[in-house]
Length: 431
Image (cartoon, rainbow, N blue to C red; front, top):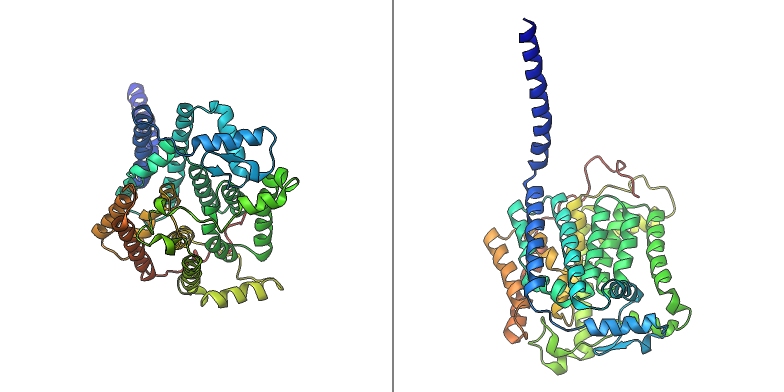
């Protein structure tokens, strides 16, 4: 009898251990997106290693970056004297700090820098996959689209552009915001801007989200933190040659070379470089932002202008119980991705490395439209093909513009849902 009881107790303990160990696996495997994301990270790590080992590096801006960094490390603080073989330095101070660190780690050699950028690629992909896993937009199988770009792999590990660091930090800022860490997100966002200004394309939509999710005092303190990052990073230049630094690092009037344009190559060069064309695109950009903000992003609040009046005029004076509110993660990601994409289609010139500015948002943008799945995939493939035509031509650039406009139409006719978590307006602390 004692033996029977002992056997029974042992069997119970075995069942408990088996249940405990197996309970972890179903919990982990419940979400196929998580499993798919981890598999993609492993597979893409192997692919990146293969590319670095066997695909020849293409020299474009690396030598210029190293020349500009060497001037900075040599004590030069006048931005007009920081130059490389591709021209003067046109990026904010964060760029110099990042590439100074890279030069220190790699000795300025390309191969170890490629390994570093390969690691950066996987880190960025991991952050992007986290964003997609936390939002309920993309089906699990479509995550593979995030790993299928020949051009983006090239931008990271064969070109070593600063866009890679800027976009990795931007995605990290979005990830922080999804967890409710708005102040940290704004600091990281500002750090991304300090590497390349294209990140500012996200600023209008991000500001609207801040007004929705934070108190007015919280918005002010978060913006102050972001501004402080710019001041601290730029301090060595602001104290010595402030005009040269601001005018060159934050130059919004640069004219890019027509030959390298991927999106408007079909536009004749005299028109392409004209101020009228630039002004037209700027007006289109502002109009699209206002229209989307009014009819899509702030539709639930009664439109953009009613929302701004209710937040700024009332909440800035009295204690407003309606805010802060908890935003749905899908609304945060959609608003930021769409705001950036509007800037992309209105940019006068998109160079090949600029594809990294919005490639990772394409699956999300396509899947929030009402397009059938086959059309979504075809549009995605079409955009990728346009970016792999070198040099771009009349047909590839015109096709790219048409695909961009088709996506915008799909976004316009997509459903605008309630942006707030129901009955959770005060449950999330804004950090």
